[in-house]
Picture (cartoon, rainbow, N blue to C red):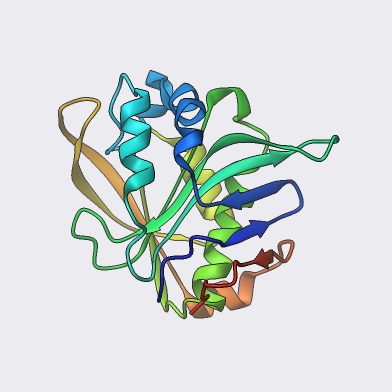
Length: 200
């Protein structure tokens, strides 16, 4: 699979696209909050523009996804509110879903909507058979989001946290294709790609 540089996914309220270097200041502003960093094992705090540039420069791995998530506005623009990924980092055996949003946008269902889009693309176009998700044991909001997407608890593990500079307990969840097919009820995603992109 070639990198999905031109891929754009639209949901009812969101536009999801590849991040650009010009997005770095906005990403840093959204992510530079301890409430965000403490829930994500790999996110530093403080989170600077340089950190955002480094993240943007990293290619999504083969079979992965990486998006800046923006909320649609009534005037036709889209305002960045967070990010969503699917990757194999930290030695994961399965593609691992990840989302984060600026605290001002919590509690509006955006994480669930973005997760649905990543999951759909993973199963429909990337032909994955099983996905993984990991969150801190204290992250009840993350647990609710992922359970609404059909993920099931698999195990409790230990993971190194950049924010705490220590190993912390995390819960791992998985979702297989059969479960996704039986539960899928959400809004269908709309996909647009550039001329040189591929979806499989």
